[in-house]
Image (tube, rainbow, N blue to C red; front, side):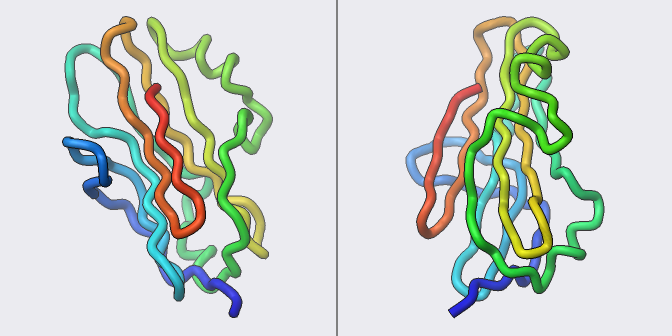
Length: 134
C-alpha cells in the first residue's frame, strides 16, 4: 500500500520522553502522523525557530510519502556550518528531508544561543525517530 500525504499543518505537540511542548509540523498520511518539531520554551536570550522549504504546503497533499532523513545541507545548498556562522552566538540547525514523488520537502529547526540554552528537536514517525539538542 502506498503511503499518501493527506495534510501538512503547523502544530504544538508533546513528545514521549520530554517534559515541554514542541512547535513544528504534523504530516498526516493514510498510515501515520509524522511530528517534526523543536522545543518551544523560551529560556533566556536564545533565538530559535523552524521553517519549511515550501510556502505552499497544500501542493504536497496527495503526494506519495517515500522517506524521512536527516541531512547536513539545506535544499538550496547552504550547509550547517554556513548557517551556524549566521546564527548569533553559538547554535546549530537540523535539516530534515521528507522525500515524496513530487520532490523534497525540507523542515529546518535552528537555535542561536550563548552556549547554555539548547533546544531539543524531535522527528517522530512510524519507522524513523530522531532526537537531537541544538
